[in-house]
Image 1 (cartoon, rainbow, N blue to C red):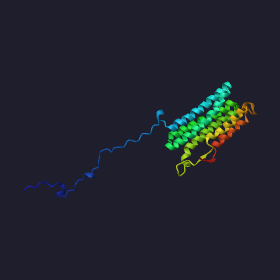
Image 2: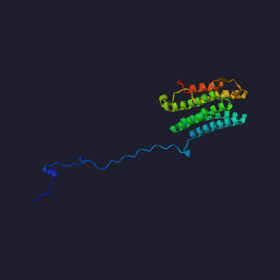
Image 3: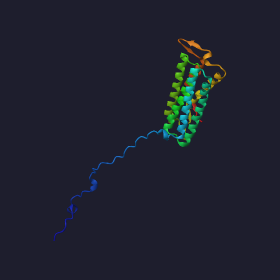
Image 4: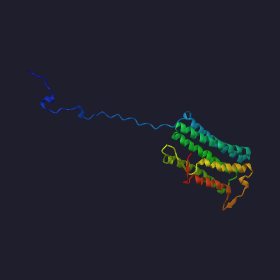
Amino acid sequence: MRYPDAGPQSRGLPSIVSADIPDETPATVAPSASPKAPPRFRELGLADAVTLANTGFGMLAILAAVHHAATGNRAALWLAFGALPMALLCDVMDGIIARKRRKSPFGGDLDSLSDVVSFGVAPATLAFAMGLNGGWDVLILIFFVGCGVARLARYNVVAELMTGPAGKVTHYEGTPIPTSLLVVAVLAYLFGTHHVPERMMAWTLGPAVLHPLALMYLASGALMVSRVKIPKP
């Protein structure tokens, strides 16, 4: 009688297990996550809109100051002085809204750029329009704006290092750029009492003129980039 062949195992031959055969099917590679695109204008949140309002008030102050310098219109300069506190209010409000709605890196960078306009370029333009336009004055105003930009860039980089256990930045390093409005307040007081810087004392130092009032901007800029630690409220 003929029996059916029992296969290789019945003859003592090693079996070939399918698991021992390498799988030549190419592995499926998960597609890499594409970087998240920045929000389009219509997708900006409430905090971002308030931040852009900050920029708008800053630009209003700049244009009003330029108008005063060109025409001597006192109302234009008062408009510039009034626009900057509104910019500060927007800066405070966007921070409150962002903390409640979880601030994004995009919103943080937008806030920094707005602050450069409202609390860096605008105060410097106001000073120039009021008569701080000597050669040394201009160099100091350029230094002041540069310090403001450097201050914000440094904060954006080291903010994580200054974050406490609660996930909140515990202190500032260097004075925040909105403190430049203290200098603007002095200018507003002088303008209101008709003590215009261009009619005040000025020094001729070498080839250029320096108004002592410009030294406030020098001090403000230096404090921004200092290592002074200020508790954050």
